[in-house]
Image (cartoon, rainbow, N blue to C red; front, side):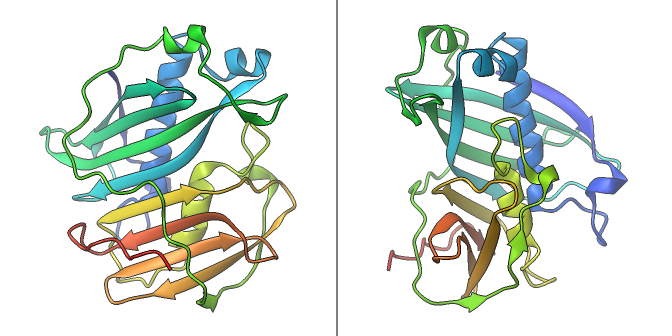
Length: 244
């Protein structure tokens, strides 16, 4: 298990002096990147071998959003490697040890030269110690498509959204989606599925499907094919929407 502590910054908070969804995913993404770097299989190692971990899906169950000035602890660990898949849990706790967030993620190991998934190389697999899977409700990694919704304003992907893989960073899809939520919508569960990567200068076209206690946002290309789909639930006990 890898852990790190941080203090919630003023710049990470909104009007309510609390973090938003994208900030929580930033914390978790940073945690697994810090672990990889500490184990010697971080971004530089991966780039030299022309390989990368590509995130396929997130699920985060959120009991409470931390607020300005709080010290929080982010923990992460992989619990399964099979073929080209890697599965990783996360947990965010406050200073009392109370769990704020439990999360699951599924990753695919990619050969960048071939542009396709490959078996996880031994140097990477052996660097990690697998731990037990976190006790939480695990939903399907697939997020449902939807055929109709409300189109939002198109967004040109800026340079500062691009990460070391030359793609729009995973959490930026969540940030764009978060901006489209009603101000009183407090997401207790967030599910994300990534379909393909947007690049610098691409235009993305958000589309919103609103339901009583769930909002689904597709970040589409100009042909209405999703780069990613993000679902926000008011209550984690709500059943997943059946696929259309």
